[in-house]
Length: 579
Image (cartoon, rainbow, N blue to C red; front, top):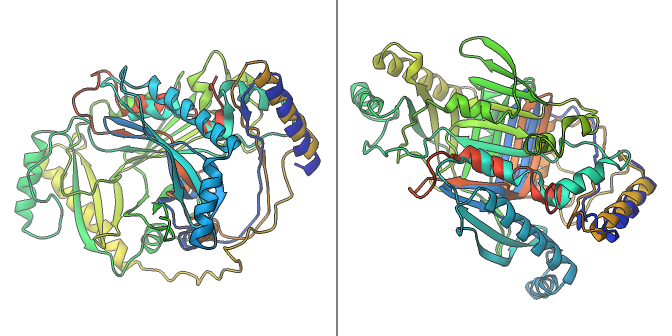
């Protein structure tokens, strides 16, 4: 879009706000650039340019996602839902005294603080949808988090997930992200849909992780179920013991990682010319302290060759079972019920030896249009704008094989999950699992590839040239802003996010872009995801929703999928209130 169209959209948004239709709207443009760079090379550069608490490389059907993010949207862990809104931004100071001064100015900026409080209220609303009554709390409020280039105002909203809800419900409740949609969420979405040339609703997307661990699992006292150390008969005995309690059991081997990096390990599993192969790389960077820059997070996770895929376009869901060589299609009202249905009879066994990180399960993305699943009546698919990229609304891959890097202990866990229901006996399941695990382990050190040097022609102390090719003109964007202001003044919404999509053609490899992103914008959540029809490279400071291990207080009929569902759409993208 042109600058004039964008300005016009802004004016429209301001009118909506003045009219009380909305409180906030985010007008965005999509920038594109064609490149021949390998996506994984991009991710390598991103890890250097922008080390973040959350970094990822994910290859899905038709797309690759490279991400680096400082924040989560929603997390569910041990029955606790966490939503961490980040709003309010200032640059970092060149010296310590300037940094303190900028922090003080940021915390006293009425506009920045008002936006932050609005998003905190939105997070409380999102978490409250899937929490036990009386458990929603703001644990941290208006804290300053420092990163390599900027500082953010951050708060933490938590709640307790009932037993009958899952992390998927928490994610669903948080989508779309309020910082992208506006506030309230649905009204800004309807308003932004009326602005011409505002498209690219697939981005930003939300990455979803669902562990292959039960929320009510009994921990095993065994030292290891892996292939490292001890005799095979010892592993077999422990495997048999675990099989008495569940039907989904992990085998793992812990290896030294001083000769290996997550970038190299990903390239061992996914070659440069395999850009259509569903896979991912997730990385994290701890937020920078006042006296230091961002540092690498503890864990990085890699996955390739999913055993199953779920692809949803509106209400049509395609299930590809690569193990059985079977492909089925079905019409469903809510695609989120499909992975829950598949997992219904799983009884995973948790191992204390495995790291407290994602160790296998569902990985993929939920596009902005997943809001139509949450609000079927108010936001039907027939009212959605045209998808010029024609990408799936949801893409999930079931990863039985993953590699988890522990950067603190300098080792990697190579993990393979065994589903006992696929075998006639426990012995057959164990032998097949060990063979697959050993094959996976051998691929990592034996298939080491040489990566390009990744020359970087940029100075990370300054912003690069602005992108000019947008999906909306400046005038259209200004008009959209005016419309948004009218909606806010009318009391229809609190916030709306008007967006425009900037495009730039490039020959750079997507993974090389991710590598550069890691240097430019190190964030808590960084992602490189190859999915169906697209490659996603992301860097984000926040989560959508998180579901922690159940402590016994949650309701029986709810799971982590319910928590994920409750978090969708993301309030920072939709606006406040969401609908």
